Length: 115
Length: 114
Image (cartoon, rainbow over the protein chains, first blue to last red):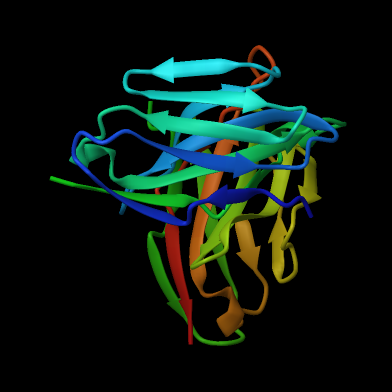
């Protein structure tokens, strides 16, 4: 069982603050690192998938970076808005056979943005 | 497109009863999987399939069966429900594009076993 850890577990910020979370994972046999956003009463939705060391992805105010050598990824939110409140999940896919589609999820970071 | 459709959305069972959670996708995705979500545990993989006729176990397969007779459908069967199977279940599908296998999730099925 792979150990994917996210920190912090929860985060409260004020509207306009910038924030970031961490996802740590074992770097051996790495294939891809996913980030999903999960709003209350909805299903998780994909934000980014990164496969190469040094990858950086951006979507609006949200961006992510990947370091496969040291086994971590950062998710950044610039100028947080109340609608950014959600649980942010990272998930690891390992190489080998059909493992590329088997994702191991972290426990998530719960972000609450206060107006 | 409907995406990934799960039924039922809610179900209450008694210990020992059996049931099937249905999952269908209309995106011609080769890969389908079932996860369960429990408080403090994140999403854990139960079973997955890389194509019709091919299934394999995930992290927590005990007490569950799956089959994949068509590309579109991937039902999850609870053989003899136990209170430990009280959870929210998510079906997901994906297709490998440019090396990435991004999951599309269904709306979830909340199961309570008494």
